[in-house]
Image 1: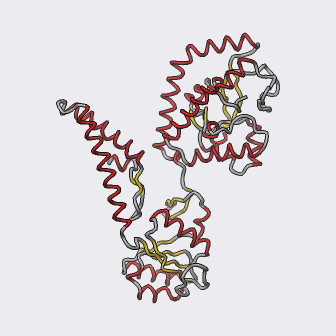
Image 2: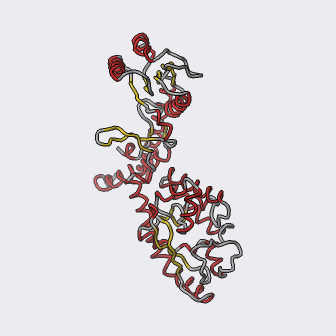
Image 3: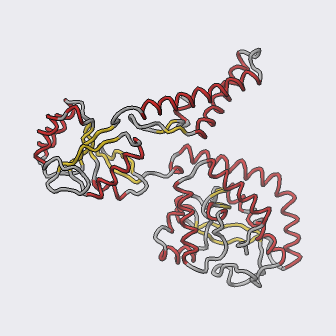
Length: 403
């Protein structure tokens, strides 16, 4: 049950299993955490560290051995998947073959293609009218029939479906539009009708949202309760000594689902009329000496932990931009608005990868957006942890693009 919940093994049908070592380890921790509580309550005499450590190692060894046993079994099977295709262009066939290889490894074999025109690089099995006779004569050589498109009537296709079912051949339908979904698609039902949707990002799942929000609340609460009481008065005094004005700087930024919110920072500039339009640059005369230090070490971002507790931000995510910049770059970069599918972050994958600071050229913002999209599509708990660790290291050594 724990292995299923933590998705230790990924795969489908008879595809070659792919072991996720990280998930195996985390699943083991969950399992033995629960087991420890049970033994401590029911069998306290057996509850000791050597016993649990030995059991934990045995779990990892047996789980890994079982995985590689399965892989060896599937690897030595002949033609795990032999399939024939009806219709489809050369591009469709190549994309299909690549997708099947990624799932099944090299144990696949394309018997050929049915169609009213030939396609280079694929064996021609005849026109659409040849499907029924060919299947009847080659039942032992085909495990799956993949239907892309044809010029057959509905009742003829229905007879092919019935023949495949009676002959224990899988009948699969793949809409030719599947190429539109570059990152994959998922099938759902809408009013009893099957529909294709873009594959949802990890943070669309409720369990991942809860996990991320829980981490945000715990870490932000620790910062506010343990660090703010001594950090805030120190920085506040230095800011006040160097320039008149408030300690905090509040500005409208673009947030989750393109909704504006008030972002908090320690004020690092002298009061000026360009703060809502002009980005900070190197040797910017608006920045105070303490402000330069705060920016270099990212300490000016600490008040945003309050934004996190409010639910307006996350600790890790795409950095929120000024409203005017959102409006400008949304016209220049097609994928720009994707970064607002998740809550903005105090730090992010783009920032720790070096894409921070002023964006004087469009390509700089394009690279920032590219990294933000990578983060959204590849999010995991460990990805967040990696970004946090890299951010701490940047704070210690300073960042050259932090002006």
